[in-house]
Image (cartoon, rainbow, N blue to C red; front, side):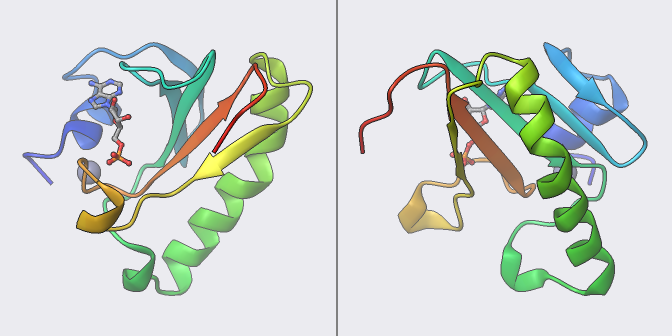
Amino acid sequence: MTDCIFCKIIKGEISSAKVYEDDKMLVFKDIEPKAKVHLLAIGKQHFKLLSEMDGERAELVKYMLMKIPRIAEENGCKNGYRLVINQGDDAGQTVFHLHIHILGGQQLGW
Ligand code: AMP
Ligand code: ZN
């Protein structure tokens, strides 16, 4: 996806504060943090919504969910954290590349 900000981050065309990267996923700091720790986990495959899930994408999301606990702990979320996946307009999704918000480093309110 040529006009996707997160694909550009993956390709290194836009800089980001990376905290983890492997061949399948990337985790970087949110540019407008909503908590003391606010990371974004993205897969290196472009799709927008969980409703677009197929077998390969499901494997990718499962892989990310398995990696996140350690990445969160190593980045200041030893006491817990919250995962958020905004889906569509009512949720305020602004970047149309599926991403998992990792929020923590403090007591989180609703
Ligand atoms: P969402 O509202 O779930 O689509 O979240 C998109 C998130 O991406 C927001 O929290 C933005 O602050 C964040 N964001 C947008 N552009 C960048 C960027 N270049 N680097 C890091 N985070 C970004
Ligand atoms: Zn993308």
